[in-house]
Length: 251
Image (cartoon, rainbow, N blue to C red):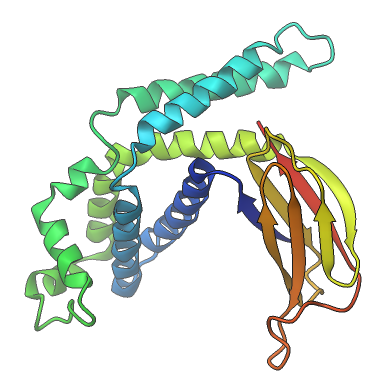
């Protein structure tokens, strides 16, 4: 199955973007090649760019506190298994505590890092990081892979607790999903109400279906069109009936 996520508010949109970027960043960091470590830095710069105007940490802490209050209300509820609940609460509270210990705005230490910002500035120019234009960066790329990796990880370390808290929030959100098996007749599906509390929609398709969902949604209406992916038919709505799974997450 292939899963397509559709955020229903700006905070969840940012959370999904950062999750994707951090996953990519850590993948590249754990490789050996200088090309991979270059890609890691370019991804890190993307993270800094999309978080420059947002107070990521404060928004995250408020969201986690709301989730904590919901979970606390389930204590001693006979319909809820208490052991998994207590485990989730402990994980959430640890994430909140660690996030609170982080000083300053998210990524602020990197924005004040003179060498990194000089590399970032050169990176905005097409081909600007060629060895003849950026000798110090070229020298850094020639260092031992483990030395480069440790330095990148040291730059990431002050953001680690916030990143872990993001993972907890997203895990709780996705874990709250309610599933529906649905059918898009001739490639189109419409639902009159999504729900005021919904924060994330997830559409799952069988991998054999050569189409992707085009989703338009708010709390009042959901429209999904499944578009073909062939060379000559790309962008056209599928004529066939498309079975899919809709997961609504609202925690």
